[in-house]
Length: 356
Image (tube, rainbow, N blue to C red):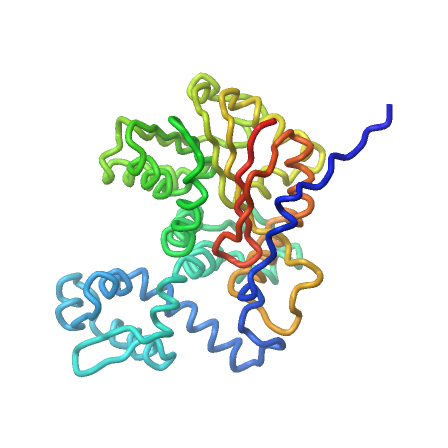
């Protein structure tokens, strides 16, 4: 009997990409913009790392001398950092007082992308030459900072995606939810706190991310309701590891991990069916990932994140996929699209999927 591909889900046809996914960075990017942008990205990462963004979020302004003394920082270097930040138009200073400009508020809200790129992938991007020349190999001589990648993802979730995610969950009933590739577990902790009686399982391969997650769970007072497990999600899915701990999970969510799970072309078609088997009680899956920029996307401007995301994964040897590929894989696994919405970062979609 000849197999017939399932029809394309009609829900997805109704949702088009937002206009702002075209971005504002004009192509070609001139030398001045490229150089200053590189320095500015490091400045943004540092402003966040030393706690300036958090302070300004909480207080609205920052008195530099008091901040330096309270945190035992190097006053001269903080002054140099703030001078650069003001040069880039991110802060305004008056005497000893610092406030964020409109542009500064925007980069503070987008800080997760800078944590992800400068902190998480800085060493990878700076190693393009030796990687290309065969002098180094990814995963051996060159690695990303897993903790920073997890932190950046968590920040983006908090500042850009949390309200979209919460809205998507309004019509999802759950008691026990698993987060695959959970990073710092901040998203899972917020979710469990908002739903009385619910429980959560955070699964991530990274030891630094799992250690951060354990601290976050304790800080949220959820030690008896949320468990952080260090495990390879692919092993959990394909080899049914930890199955006794996951048998009662009724909802599964995963953000920015699908492309990693689908990296091996020989088992790509079996990942989602095996995921359903690994969570036999699951009725709903919330899956989000960033797709390859479509061929018809605007070619004269770029959004934040897309080019870096695509380059980083090329350097790691991990293929990315189109929206159409994901939807075909969902259909073949018996996952029916209930809802699909744009999810914060450019060319990123959040799917609510029901099991047929």
